[in-house]
Image (tube, rainbow, N blue to C red; front, side, top):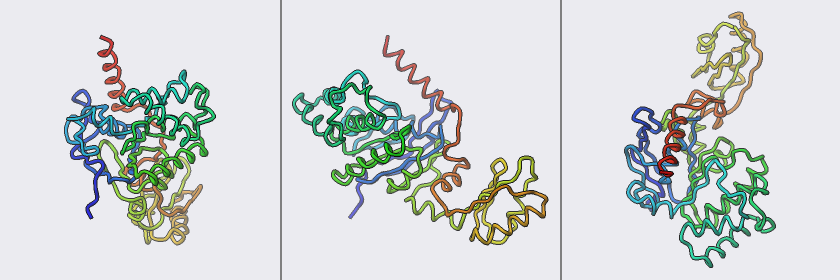
Length: 339
């Protein structure tokens, strides 16, 4: 039986101002009913991709099919069939939770009585009944996120887009949010497309993952496939500041398949970490370099991310050229709307 696709992307590209390439000809598919993770460093093209798939941005080139509809040709129909939760809070703090839902229902053209009924059901499902008639600005972070999830579901979408949905929530809030997503998938078979900065979430929640860097997809597969693809153990070896580079010494040791150096920490892929560590310490000592710390671990999604992008996943970065271009385009759009 053929697997049905909820999302099909072919050669999708977005260039800002004719100069900044945010998304560079990516292609992938998301199966119906699966949770698909879309990971990447800051400015890699994640949010731009989500914006194109949800008809918020027009692609420069390529095709995006969402729920059987060409996004470029039928954007308004696509918007009516999907649910979207953005990084930024979208709930109106001055309205109650119930009012936020009823207003959202009206925006989708849902009849008043039906909108009230859907709002009541979602309030109960999201465990917000006790706070439904309080202003949303009085909600905790976790409650506000559950309200925004309810708003995203008011039109009964088949596909739910989550752009950094748990950013800023505490561990309890994150766990609670994903608990609701798991139930939605189990009860309704909804397709979930998610970007997240929490790799433990992606590992646990996603059936498949794609990693984007510099606008291109550099790896994809199930979490297990991506981790197994690294092979062996990963050893991190830290040396003092100002020490000589011992990369070549480490590469020459038995069982080593790759060495990466970041500042004064060496990331070494090897067949057996417990065998490699004493050899590495001896090699560093022979080169006159001390070892401040050593850790050994099996491949994780953090290691997968570092392998394909060369960067730590939570690395602090300033605004990228893409970030500035997106911001400028939003400002220009707002100015045009006021004319």
